[in-house]
Picture 1 (cartoon, helix red, strand yellow):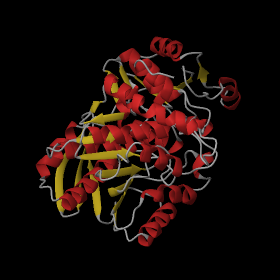
Picture 2: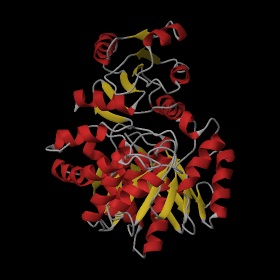
Picture 3: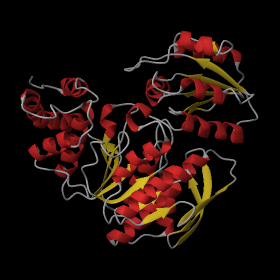
Length: 433
């Protein structure tokens, strides 16, 4: 197949299988070897965790960018356009550059597919995207790159790099079929990004999975900097959209930090990023200041995370896609929006804990739920099944129908929240943006 244009390049990428039965990094290592090992010698910060990876990566991007260095980011999924996943200084890769990367990689992939003697076969979709990212950052000679893990860590295709430091945001239940049925099993998978003699920065992690991570770090002689120990944050009240907090630790005492994103979970993400940035700057001999940190953090935004898309009535998008994320959203709704009725339009992928997510939101008395579907590339939780589980919860055949129904019921002082999946938010956001 000759890839002639951008659409064909995306077709080639998305046409690949998503998973292989046996987890391995050998296939990824082979692909990169054929590309000249573009990841070798790169300066990376590696980020994993059940939730908060994207926001933490965004904070780190803006902090490093503020020092004058160029910084690449690798994130998933995208919200508006596929190219967002590979970016430099917040600017997504161009269609032309993406096409050229595919043209370089496609012949190698074809040979791997055709090699009947191979023990691991051709690469997956995510492995190809990861290889494209490494090659692009090498070509563009970025100074640093913040790399978000796809799933887990140990066998994730990004885990071929050697990081300056590793960051683990949290460990909660998600992707159980791949990562395991307990928090300790999931933590073991995420511990795979902890590397020999390289420091590890830990976010707010529950005791049992934290012990797994700390033991892994000890085995690899990795110094651990832990939220609640080496650094702490203190959230301050604010009447405006966003949050205020102070940061203490790692040799710094920073007061009156402002962020544009809502929720205590975003304060945690920002504090974690600050701690990682301070350690990074120390290791790289980069001069920083409290004002630089405050200015960079305040400018950071991240699409689809309690994102305000309309003022009157208040319409907010959030890609909470598992129980832990929904619990964080619930805290924000209770803390900041208890004075109004909240109409939640939710759509959840079939492989997520839809029952628990919906039940969690229903504990708020001012929440009115409408369950719906969207044009997903994966199966959405069946509406008939949810009707049996929650007979009193309203349903709509499409989110557009749900929006029309809700706007006829609400007042201008009320709020609409779209949530349940980042893929869902991606589709809805196009309507408002």
